[in-house]
Length: 413
Image 1 (cartoon, helix red, strand yellow):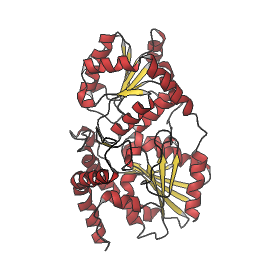
Image 2 (image 1 turned 45 degrees about the horizontal axis):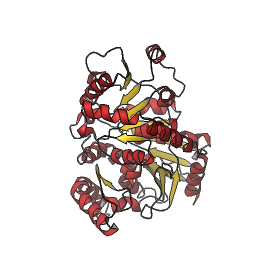
Image 3 (image 1 turned 180 degrees about the vertical axis):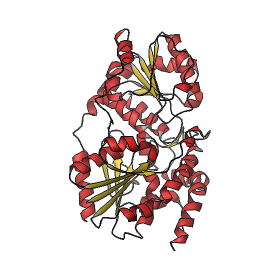
């Protein structure tokens, strides 16, 4: 079959598609990869045919990118120029084979438009985190705010629709409906309701012990395990990092995510918290300019280190709650302090807390004292032992073969 992968966003959005794309290529299928231009090195290294989409790196400096309610609008607006090209690009790539479009959820509206040129096109959606799938079932968070368990489903459904009508539809629907009107298609009235009608198959890329399936998820659905992918799993640590790990107690790793260039306050609080507790630390970010001007010998800065290689040597991981980072920490059994800012991060953090594998601290409440107190809780024995128990659960059989077979069945249907 011919598989066209479409993604957007940061490396955390990219890697799950590389995980699937490489497996499909190894099974003999043609694979074309459409993604942001800046990710070309990752895709080329994976051996997949890359087609670059425009991406403006200035979005990483937008003041609302990491806002709990306004962040989605920033991401949506930043990705629409690239997604507008999707119907023509997919039509140009048509090979006449059984074609399958495997897409990021935010690319689903444009994927649906591709069917006008390719009526037999099959579409599979990849839901990277549980909160990508709005539900009325527990645990239910509206941004950082948990909805009490006693609130009935009808009221929860009203909450979802009210918030979507205020924060999502005014951003997404004007451009979407303009594109549909040009093609003689009816208007969409609710983005969330519409997205669930598009895919022929949904893939939930997280295990059921992290998020159990609920009745209002789109169907048909295949729930797989975490797509743990590293572009360079055998990369040797730098000499500076090896020396740092060898000379003292296991450090605490701090990372706000590879795409976060607005974490100066976070790292300042981290440096003061570890100094207060007498801990060693690794600051992990490709953006050195957001760190304090000078770091003490007890703190080591690294631009990039594969988490799979690093986490077995550390005491804890402090991170933003991105689903990829969360999954790596769960696999390694590393105690976590999750500091969520926006998007799926609050839900991921809540699930880590429910598992007992970590603690959560809202990014907007971060101070050196609060971070130090949360770190003390994370480093206590109870969290560490529970994190190890979750890691044992993470060693489930590889689900990638079953996922590929299901995609093959969909293309043939």
